[in-house]
Each structure stands twice: as structure tokens, then as C-alpha cells.
Amino acid sequence: MNHKDLDVWKKSMDLVEIFYKLTSAFPEEEKFGLINQMRRAVVSIPSNVAEGAARKSNKEFIQFLHVALGSLAELETQYLIAVRLKYIIENKEIENKSNEVKRMLLGMRNYLQKK
Image 1 (tube, rainbow, N blue to C red):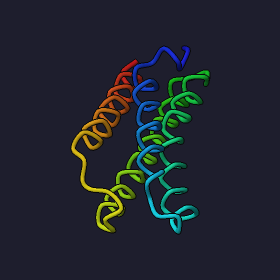
Image 2 (cartoon, rainbow, N blue to C red; image 1 turned 120 degrees about the vertical axis):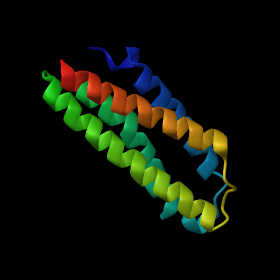
Image 3 (spheres, rainbow, N blue to C red; image 1 turned 90 degrees about the horizontal axis):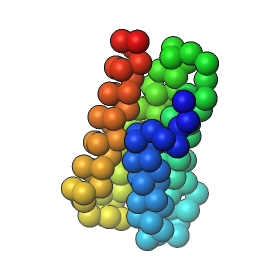
């Protein structure tokens, strides 16, 4: 299975782009804090989808999807921290895109579990 053909990988790559642009406006003092944490978390999502898709078994792929889901939960928490700190204003479009990726990750996991 080629990860580049997976919609969940494509949508999570879009999320990477969104969060890189979003964090570029954060205060300079967050360069090694929240900016770094958010970027690492968002990059982890498509990376784990790709690594899981390259594995031999569905069981391994599911494990990597769980890691991607964990990274997404981490990212959502960091996003809410940034909102609370007033680095950004709450953005429903970003929240919707994050939720879409979560639904797709869960859908992929459920599909593989049934195979």
C-alpha cells in the first residue's frame, strides 16, 4: 500500500502546512517551546501513517495509526494552549480539519481491524 495514495495521509499533510504557517506567527520566545512541540506533533501524524502503510501486517499499521492519533491529541491540546495564551484566536476551520483527520484515522483503523 502506497501511503501517498491514502486520503488520510494527504489530509494530514495539509494539516502540517496549516500548523507550520500558524506557528510562524507565534512569539519568538516560543521557538523552542510551543512552536517546536506543535510542529513535531503535526509532522508525526502523516509520518506514522506512512510508516504504518509500509509495514507488512495490518496489526503493525494499526499500531502506527494509534501513534498518529496520539500525536493528533497532543496537537489539539497544544492548539488549545496557544488559544488560551492568546497567540492565536480560535479557528473553527482548523478545528474542523483536525477533526476530519481524526475521523479518517479512526476509519482507517476500524477498516483494518475488520480485515
